[in-house]
Image 1 (cartoon, rainbow, N blue to C red):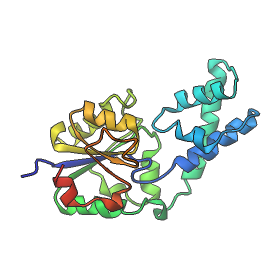
Image 2 (cartoon, helix red, strand yellow):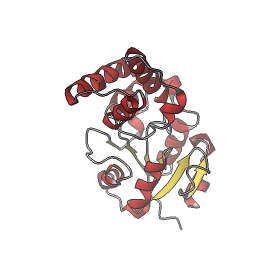
Image 3 (tube, rainbow, N blue to C red):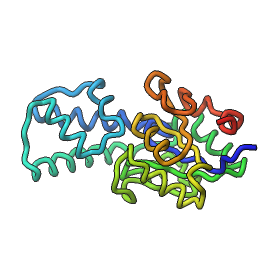
Amino acid sequence: MSTIKACIFDLDGVIVDTAVYHYKAWKRLANELGFDFTEEDNEKLKGVSRTRSLELILQWGGITKTDAEKEELATRKNTWYVDMISKMTPAEVLPGAKEFLELCISAGLKTALGSASKNSGMILEKTGIAHLFDVVIDGNKVSKPKPDPEVFLKGAEGLHEAPENCVVFEDAIAGVEAAIAGGMKAVGIGSPKVLYEANLVVSGLNEMSLKKLYAL
């Protein structure tokens, strides 16, 4: 008999793909500072906080800025990003994500969002899926970035479930590590070569089923 009672989902790369908007905003910033920013560079920022991302980008561009200037640059990037995500539509939900969430709910499982994004509320609203989550824990409610399990532990707490009864869906190594550190099972969304620490790896939620979930 499965003890799984709740599913906690990361947002970026699992439910929606906002990486393209982060990429466009960071690229615009890098270009304004006089250097280029590639999609490969963007991959290295997966699951990394905005402040740390900016530090890495400035390092790659060989640019030094004061803390006040960094603050201004991070704010500018975020303004462009928010402007882009404010135009998102339900068509941008990744294949199978909405269906799998509905499947979990119909099976009596609780659902939570566990994301570092401070804009997750807006994204869920614009894509029309906010009602599919019992609890939303995002960057506004946590202080420690993944691989610290804080975001997922708060999700479990909000759902009134023990960590061992929760399954986390994550596309980043740090996220999978956070789930394991929190005593939860992890389903990796992406490549088994990268997310080998997860209990199961699928290419997207369109590949998930209750059978696979209960077999974890």
